Amino acid sequence: MRNDAHRGEWLQRLARRWKISPGRALVVLLVFACTGTTVVLIKRPLLDRVAGDGQVPVIFSVLYYFLILPVYNLLLLIYGLLLGQFGFFWAFEKRLLKRVFGWLRSR
Image (cartoon, rainbow, N blue to C red; front, side):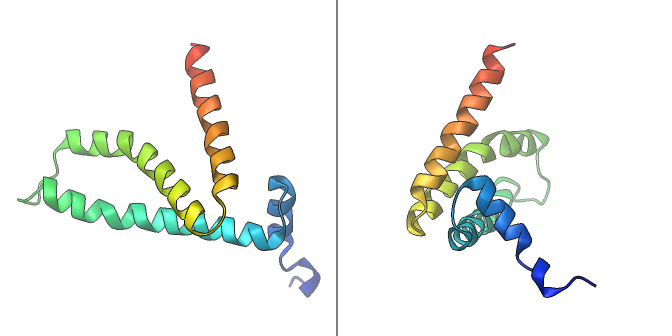
């Protein structure tokens, strides 16, 4: 069994990787958790609205997964703003966009 010295080591590693304090890393993890939970919670009402008869069109599933990325990223910024971490998530989004558009340009 691990001893108490190893508790929180994963949080320390995240904090070092992100170059932030461990306390701030906890808040960042909370933002990710809230964003993921919100995305899960909005899917069911969307499905019910689109598929009144219980049958979900395949095109909806494809569109959902294509469109959820911008919604997820917007929610990250909103929760980041509400929890005082907008700067962290704005930088996160800029890095993501550079990677996506850099990948598209290289093709």
